[in-house]
Image (cartoon, rainbow, N blue to C red):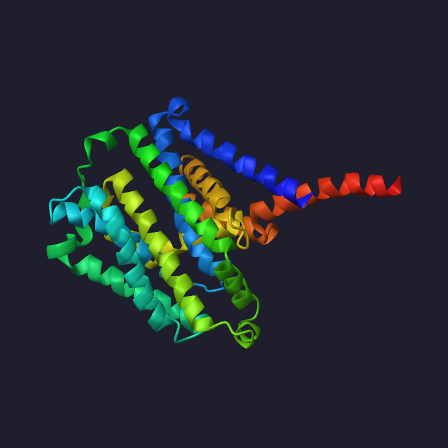
Length: 320
């Protein structure tokens, strides 16, 4: 029964991937921008969920890695004259290096102090980007990045973002269900017990921090490719709330929760923003209600509904 359910779930996600691939054939251009934003935010939030949901680490530095990835694309075009696409493979080691260094420093503390250290490190990177005018163009940012000819159309840019995002999500899924991912769950549940079992807790946490920062930088690079810009506000500390909200909406302890949360968050944000000038206040209140009413996230609610429908036929069979 479980194997059948897993097979059915896999077919559902494959079907959704095919629908996403056919998006340019039935979506308008402005809707493709929305769909691309959903894909990028889903990857960003899923990378954070490797820390928040799977390892139990609350990090407020994820905006820094996202912004560094975006600037990797912008700076190779601005200063080196290379194709902006060269910034995508470059963003991966840059994000990994920054995450490794900042993680090694922040993991010297635990719980609240760890979260505050990540916030301080994130703001440090933001200040450097904001004030280094000769290199990053400061608060002006870098705009109008020239993309290769095949990415000039919105549909082609969308397909490119989708392809990279799918590959990255598959990689994150493999990591999540691997023995390494199981060790991270053990650390989340009980750090002391995991250490007694022989798991080097600090080393595993640093590895998870580095991997999460790597994929966050990749998401930032995709943002710069699709939107053709990078600016300091991408790294500002308040931006760290976006992937956290997405994770809480979709489901913190479930791999696909951030993807579901990204869809709900973007559609909700755009709907509210189009109706009132107090969009941030209303959106915050709605998100607060969602978090309080369904703490397990939307995917958690879906799992309960499916489990209830599975249980009913079993009860009828036992009664018979």
